Amino acid sequence: MNTGTDPVDDLQEEDRELYEHHNIKVDKGQVMMRIDKFIMIRISNTTRTKIQNCCEAGSVLVNGKPVKSNYRIKPFDEISIVLTVPPRDVEVVPENIPIDIVYEDDYIALVNKKPGMVVHPGYGNYRGTLVNALAYHFQNLPTTKTKIGHDVHLERPGLVHRIDKNTSGIVIIAKTELAMTRLAKDFYDHTIDRKYVALVWGNVKEDEGTITGNVGRDLKNRKVMHVFPEGDHGKHAVTHYKVIERFGFVTLVECILETGRTHQIRVHFKSIGHPLFNDNEYGGDSVLKGLNTAKYKQYIHNCFEMCPRHALHAKTLGITHPITGKKLLFESKIPDDMQSVIDKWRKYMEKKEFEID
Image 1 (cartoon, helix red, strand yellow):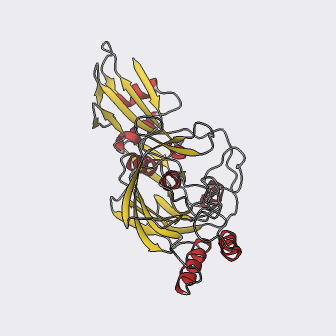
Image 2 (tube, helix red, strand yellow; image 1 turned 90 degrees about the horizontal axis):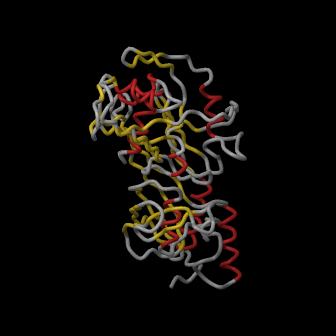
């Protein structure tokens, strides 16, 4: 039997840590067997119930088609499975951290994450994260039981995806295993609608356009990403954008992700000469456009102090509800720090404080 385990290509690198994509080709001598039992034997750290949840969500494919958990495998079948990764051996400590829950039902919750908050515990960030806050918020919920086939699965909070620490905006939380599995598949299939708003340096030439370029770890600095020529390094990435408002030296744009690579919007705009305003990892935290005067430099410094992070907000998230199938669209307003800088640019443009070329 040939088994390969690859990251889920269509999610951000941080998100891919949450899911595993397994490919299994069944040997020619394999006896017929239920697929849930077969996968449980072949893949460690999983359970039959979890596999049945994946089958229910359509995340188990045989020869390219979704199958139920009672499907009986045959020699030469090609099986593809998307599974959530088992929790790491890191205790999540519940913390009473205020969070902005914009929607909640028995299966999902939508949280408007503030800039500066890390989403998931990790090295150097075991406390103060969104997950710590969620553990506190959900601890007193009544335990509900969701019948899945002949199994009963207890409700629990769960992280579906992430956004950068200094990016603000909407994050979706799954409260049951089935909801998490179905939402994971939606992210994998690109059926989640995500729109971001960004303030970028320079006067973007076209009113709308598309940025295409492979995104991968920088070969010299692994902490940041880089755009590579197609077929060289990295993974295929596409960002669509539309200009919302022009301020001469900076531009407010709406971004729609066709793919979801790590730092995709930030590194894509850098690649076309328009780094995000005050993005310290991609060169946007210095005066890139404008006047060489003390007054203008002080103006930019004041803007940086008002919004001490890259100016990027995950404004819109559209999903298909994992249980009801209903289309849902959620929006969050641009947070005060980023909005104050936008207002400041708008105000000074109206006053013609600076001459724009």
